[in-house]
Length: 230
Image 1: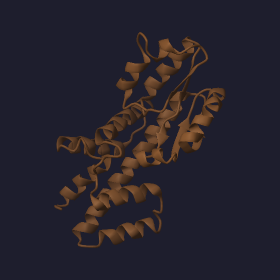
Image 2 (image 1 turned 60 degrees about the vertical axis):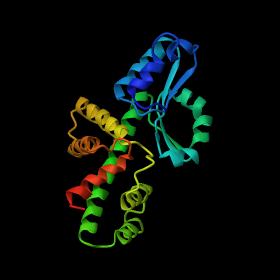
Image 3 (image 1 turned 30 degrees about the vertical axis):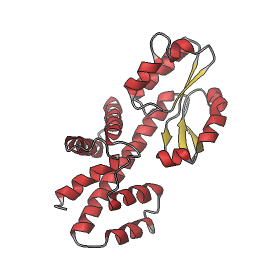
Image 4 (image 1 turned 135 degrees about the vertical axis):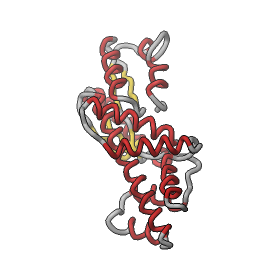
């Protein structure tokens, strides 16, 4: 898994890189969170060389990867995904098939990451209100995750925001901004307005401007706390 489009382009294209090095019928499995456009470009470039391309981005923080509990979203030729399934089964707890168009998996991954950031922003604002009102934030987190919000995403990020534990970063804030940028590009291509994504982009930019680039992306919650005077 590589950090962004530039990193993947640097190893995929050019003399001696992936496209030139792979033999015919070999598979390039990209598990990076990249743009829809680059995924399409890679699929076309591999097809020209009679190679195969499978896009398989994942959901899960580093601890999930270490425990082989990732969720994998795979797209590309069905026969090639089946060739890769033993690898996916070793890395993750479930593999979802997202169709023959490899870029579809990338779009689903970007949309999923957007939902995570929307949850982070919602939790940030809620915890800021509870704390500013002098209520027990630990109890609030327990109520949330023991009732309607009993889901890993609320448990994980609620705990990080409640404890203000943003280091070591499981997913650095600049990577969150990168994913948000790629999401908004896909949204523009499809003429889909995403107001919350635009708000989250501004949160990421403000956080970077305040020197939070080495923190976990959930550190955007510090902005809500600061806005509340905490």
